[in-house]
Image 1 (tube, rainbow, N blue to C red):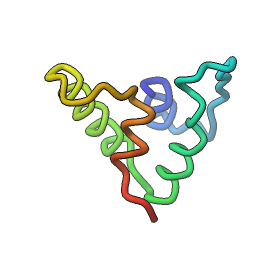
Image 2: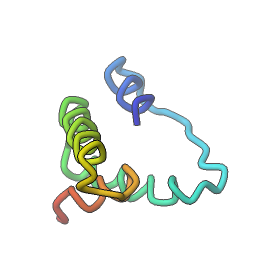
Image 3: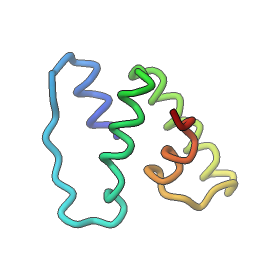
Length: 76
């Protein structure tokens, strides 16, 4: 996520990523689609990352970030 935010902030038009079959990254395309449809900014995603970190530290969630983010974004 941090790499995606940095690439977006720098104005690069795309980022290549490889999941290498990692289960945690299986839903990345779903996140990309939701973020695009809702036109979230780098600042919006940063706020979500901070919110997630606070929830993990206080043990209010046990979800991984990608799963948590998908659940936290409204459906369109």
